[in-house]
Image (cartoon, rainbow, N blue to C red):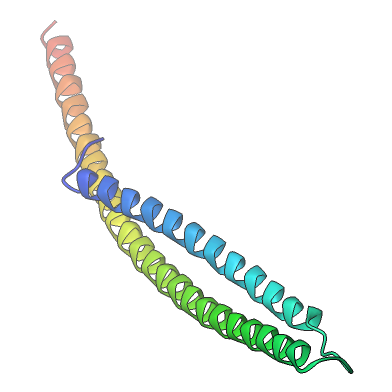
Length: 140
């Protein structure tokens, strides 16, 4: 049954579905950032400091370690950013779901009101038919 809220319910439902897709994407980004951070931590462990050798080896090792630390810092920032994005997407999804449920509830109330009105009209029509049938039988 179509009501004045039907188009709003459709719109809100599409907003919820869109928000769900955004949350899924944000969650995938967060997982990707988390894996990248783990990989960055592992790369720090792979850098070995030479215990003997030339100064060039020491400088190369220090540069590699510095690069690995920079990579870890970058991935930490990326992880924080994706976490923020995920939290915002979840919050938007929650708000969209509340809006959808609100208009869905209003639509259901409207439908129930219409059904009640139809049942009342049907009862009146049946009473009228019964009264007319009774009058016809009473005349005969």
